Length: 202
Image (cartoon, rainbow, N blue to C red; front, side, top):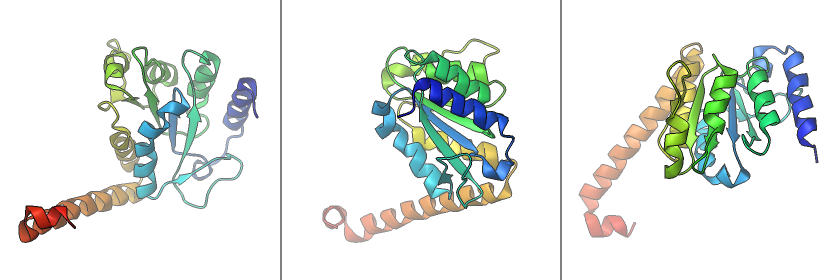
């Protein structure tokens, strides 16, 4: 298994490779611990629904134009990895980072935002008690954040940022929005037409 030093070397090597935009991930998804994975799964679900592919090797990009990467990066246990990730993010081709962290000292999102500036970072408080830590940035050190556990929304926000430059992403966002809208209509009609008890028994 790669050591933390190996991961840092990998990030720095990817940053130095100067690959074209279509060969690098567009969105980075990081979390403070693998115990955050269940909460952060929403981000992966949203990106998958928008047609993004997961990129696990910078030297071997997936076929789709838009992709994302994922790492565990602890602000407290591996600060050197956090610095390397944030410092190389833009050079590695990322356009936006989604960072999730839990606990009362959920420092990964805001530290990443400070180091990666001006690259946009969207913070995800993994737990309710993490909200104040994630959003508590001083004036002049911006971060965008979603409510506790709302990593799905974080990924939609990341796609909205990309949609300003890429019409294809905008189209996918609009299509996903329309699908969700029609889904509400289908449920509403079924509830009304079947009645509450039959609806529950579907």
